[in-house]
Image (cartoon, rainbow, N blue to C red; front, side):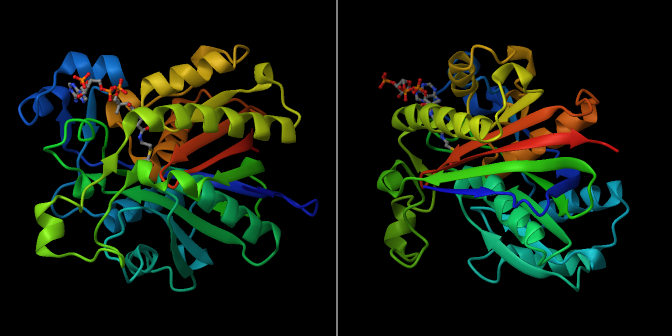
Length: 338
Ligand code: ACO
């Protein structure tokens, strides 16, 4: 387990956010035609009604570019002012070159270094922690953090236990020295490699390269032990939220908004029950319309919440996520618009 915090010398800030969701909608009714399931089962067990699916010519890189362009446009920042592009994804366009380099080219961010990182659904929080520390250390001024996923590329549409859950989409934010937007007060991260087999794509890496056998055995798709993951997800996010709240000496009732990873409404409900002083209407949800978009779920939700205009000056916002690895993380942000 590890933790990252801001130095006393200053803070990093999220200047702006952006998101992109593909147009194509895959509804529960559509899934009824593909596997043995029902709209009613999916809604009751997950809270998901529909999810977005990338077109054949949409990729993790292209969706990431669109989300990034929106975040840049909101603060009129020139791509040449970006020092580093960090991309959190488990569905990169290629094993290499990294997706961050592909995005750098499309944006024309020629002054930026470019790096991918992978922490499954917690990827955005891991990237945020890295960006925060590189800003606070004084190494960089502006970092473009992107979380983008084309999960449809690794989802088995013959497996009803997983294909109902996942969707595609991208979110982005500019993390900066400039004191404006969301102040990053604290980021807490954790991991447990003993549970790596609970959520895995078995083939396509160095251990089991692609072969006729791996394709025939459908090993290039997500394999998940959903029941066990569910329990870990609730426990780990509860622990992580408490860790972050305590570190910031923040009481539950003082929290403006909670944005949990959008994996399943029942996971979100179970977490809400463990924080009885958190107002339930302050837990922001997008899971119903986008499903689980892995690394991008939390930043897509933050961007949507900002757009509603319901975030008030000095509101503390808590993000929390959990994913394969296992990995988890939480962050406390404070909104200071001006
Ligand atoms: N339609 C109808 N029936 C189904 C479906 C479906 N789509 N899927 C499973 N079932 C059946 C099962 O076969 C089982 O039948 P049986 O009792 O005859 O054996 C029954 O429904 C119950 O199955 P469970 O797996 O116990 O269902 P559960 O209530 O646990 O819900 C779910 C399954 C939705 C996957 C849940 O376990 C979950 O959300 N887990 C967490 C998943 C998660 O968070 N994963 C991602 C982490 S994020 C990341 O890193 C990508």
